[in-house]
Image (cartoon, rainbow, N blue to C red; front, top):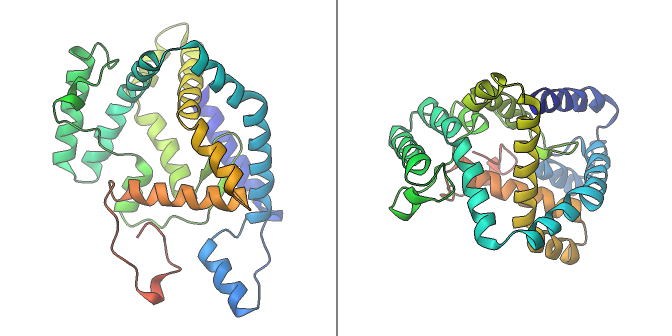
Length: 257
């Protein structure tokens, strides 16, 4: 269910963009800011962002707070490790597709060790012994292959992304072996929904204080979240290593390059 929903939402968002483009300014300073933001769909994105904030305020944030109150910290860490371990096969495939075979070996080792000695991933046994979690998704793979990011995009419920990462998310879904395992059971819809819900609640719970503080300190929360997303994504694209400074004439290019 979550797989069809993600693809439908992304497609529907793009169909709606025809009337949601910002007007390109003529003033040189305003034009420079417009290019730097790389957000031509800003009017539509702001509406979607407001919708997502309503969903967060009414549903996701209360669930995350209840999750924190009801479940001890160590148990939440175990849940987070377990959910991350389910993603390791997708990370492994993308490490290989990117030609990062040392990282692929680390990811494979992590999955085997954590799935066995780590009790199905509840404990990060591999991380405690020097095998740190690697980054790998198909959006990153497309970046390595030279595909441009495209404009900033806010997707209903799922939040900020870009066309490259939106496509990547769809491909990652079909690279996930647990999708096919779930299909073999009569509870596949419940399994898909539970995995999506628990992942979302756990991630929101781990960012309760950070997002609250960011919202309090921001004059424009939308712009602050856009900046935060890009900083995090650039770090992911470079596997946590800061990229080299851009030349002046490249400042308005793909921020992932």
